[in-house]
Amino acid sequence: MLVLGGGIIGLASAWRLAQAGASVTMLDPSPASGASNVAAGMIAPVTEAHYGEEALLGLNLQSATAWPGFARELEEAAGLPVGYDSSGTLAIAFDPSDKAALDELHRFQDKLGLESEPIPAVRCRQMEPTLAPSIRGGLNVPFDHQVDPRLVTQALLAACRARGVVVNSAAVTEILLSKGGFAGVRTDAGERVVAGQGVLATGWQAGRVQGLPASAVPPVRPVKGQILRLRLPASLPRPSRTIRAVVRGQSVYLVPRPGGDIVCGATAEELGTDTTVTAGAVYSLLRDAQAVLPILSEAELAETAAGLRPGSPDNAPMIGPSIVDGLAIATGHYRHGILLAPVTAAMIAELLSEGSSSSGSEWARWAAFDPRRFSGEVTQA
Ligand code: GLY
Image 1: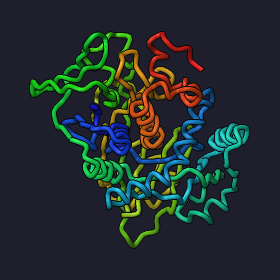
Image 2 (image 1 turned 90 degrees about the vertical axis):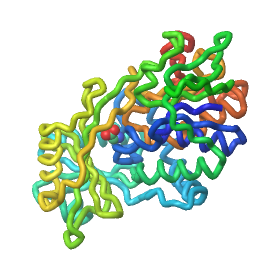
Image 3 (image 1 turned 180 degrees about the vertical axis):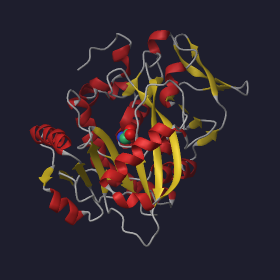
């Protein structure tokens, strides 16, 4: 069994497949890097609920519910921490029109039965005294948590190795087919790695994979996200939970890490594979972050980075069989790669270790995420 891609999705899938008894080789020239290394790590199905994405919300909630157990099991298997933090999230409105947007989000969350409590500005500041006095109110969202993706991917690598997963640092140049089915890969080292089953989990690069018929290639594209890491001196107060804010119509999030950094993100830019960190993005993220947390003007700008999220045409991931026998796809997670890792890995392990004949009702439930919806073979749920 080959897992192509060693980001959080490939690593989690490789781990689960190995646990299920498969003999797994994971191929990636630089595992635990890419978008997983840049991500803030919000486990945020409630504050990231969007109109028209109700099926995705169901999957997001399922995976968020799985996260605490996944984190515990992974920490035990790897002997490493993953930084799961259940302190919750406060969503903040900066000005009156931002408050109107937040009220609208709350109505939508309420209609969907999601836990989100409107709270006045004074209570927001009691909960988080570093918030600016001028904020207009917020939503308390206790179910939206966070994890540290850099710790998670390191732990997954260790857990994979402990389970016997072979980590091959060659780059895949081509998928090999035999009689129309998956037969392995060719690598940049000129090697043929032969296997009857594979998982394509190379994030946005899955959209450029060679060797597959055009209708089997997942239509993923890179969506650039620029993000900052801010470091406050230990003597200064900091927020105790994730702060998301709408500031003059722009979204910004601030995710405090136990080690002291605050991750501030993120842009969403359609610029192909460009990963330049721009002055404009750093400026607007800092401006909006400081508008809600003025103390950040004292922070060291410890890191700037840009990652490429794998975006899909309908913003939903592609998880499941492809039109090529033996090849599963796990990509297109867009803004939810960290959140969706546990459920994606479980789905891939179920698909490939028990065979797609075990699909039945469970796979029918997941039809909205079937990669074949873009190959013209499956009617979208
Ligand atoms: N889920 C946060 C982001 O993609 O920026």
